[in-house]
Image (cartoon, rainbow, N blue to C red; front, side, top):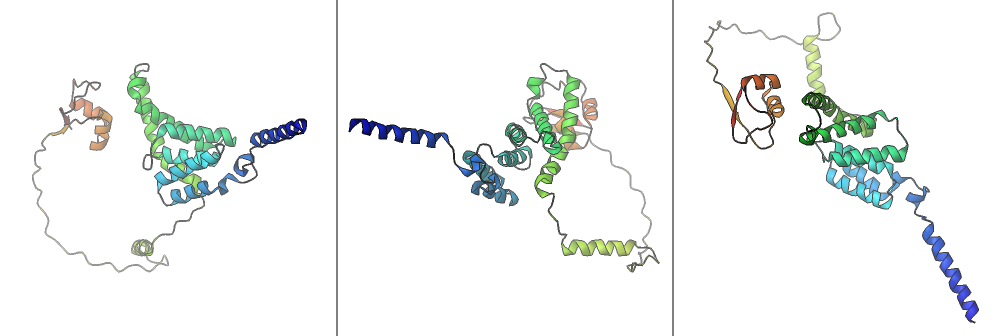
Amino acid sequence: MSHRFWNVCGGLLLACVGWVGCDERPWVSGKADPKEENNYRQAEAYQRMNQYPKAVEYYQRALDVNPRNADAHLGLGIIHSDSAKVPEYGFAYYHLRRYISLSGKTNDLIVNQLIRATGLRLAELHADTIGKIQTQGQLEQMRRENDELRKSVLSLSNQLYSANARVTAPASLIANSTNSAMAMAPRGSGLPAKASEPTPRTAPRTAEPRKASTPKTYTLKSGDTLAKIAKAQGITLQQLQAANPGLDTRKLKTGADIRIP
């Protein structure tokens, strides 16, 4: 009796060990498409509706179900890399590299460019620390490259999910463009020309004397940099520095006034 009892217990123990060792969840074992998992599909729906915090939440849930879901990593990387959505460049860098690792698509040009752009953005955010070990010229070059890459981040991220989307122009926009084409069409081109209205004659204006321009000033705020101020004022960094000689760019004091040329 005792011998038979222990045989049964041993068989049950082996069965339990075998069951635990074999993960039969379809999303993990590869028996089902990870894109069909409910959390992933919900995340895609929220992303299409521009509800990015909810999309991030459900992409994370999809990774809880299947940590090897490369497309969930890609979705998170795209959202976090866009400063207009949920900018978390450290998360973007991690998830995009994780996508490359899991999918094996090491030659994906768009994703690799996004990885480089988010890396440069992280470097810019920590420029003070990097500046201790790099020259000012290297940092300026990095900022210029980052400005160019930042402009393409939005278009690159949209290409991944909107390559096959068709955008229908509103009827009013089509009508306005048609009217503009008719007005500009030369005679004999096959397009009906829009009737031109007579322009009323007006008396010539006498030149008004120019008013003397008063110098502008700007009060420094926390987090301001000369490059950011110059961009906001529509001038170059060199013009701003020339208008403020002797200004120490590394020690900008909050509340101080600087001249705007």
